[in-house]
Image (tube, rainbow, N blue to C red):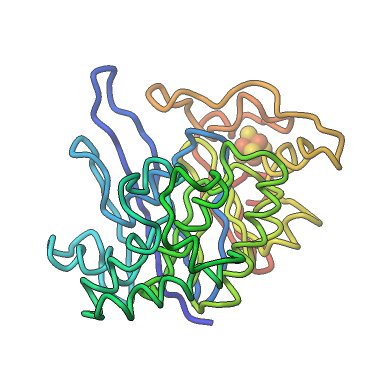
Length: 313
Ligand code: SF4
């Protein structure tokens, strides 16, 4: 299984009035062809920043270094014209808030049709019919009727499904979903998981799911990457991760699941302005030793898994 996307030593620093915010630090991972990778971590750990850097949607105060290789080309070095084409046709992103992403004044079918009219030069009727097909794929019982409705006539969950339909319109190589279940209740989360499974069945895209929700990651992903305060701490196949987490933070995260006793992690993530020396997790780690407080551990391989911790060096 080859890689379609390779993130190499990606660092992102925001220059702000309170100082430099170190959002992502020398992070590396691959997204393989047809794979679903979940990038998991607490709110503010840098995962959405990575998603936006892949789309080159970061604000101007962001300083980015490293490489984001897509089909052998570095996204960070592409011209505006090249990245615009990638954004429109090859990598699509589904943002977490449908009400911000959909146009309230445009019919659902027209919103799904738009990329087909612009990029595939389809005629209006064919594009609208294709939008109905996509709505059907995403589980709408009466897609012809839905296509003629406006976003305010649908529930939040339905609008999220519309966004997924839009993301599939041009058959992209990669779909990035940024916190797709944030703010949804448990019933809608279950629905959303089913919708992503439908999307995967209907489409050969690779999927990068950005989430704080381990249950969502378990249901949907082939592999999981754990992020903490701008660092990737562990990358494992999903079942191996849940059966035997390696990193101490991974273990603590899993203990927060209801089926494992619901023990939320104690303490808080460190400031991204005043970063602690050494392993960033050391102020919360039950296994901390002297060297952990002095130097950042490097990430190393263990039976096909990767982990950043002195216990594995
Ligand atoms: Fe804990 Fe040290 Fe491993 Fe960090 S490097 S997770 S402080 S044992």
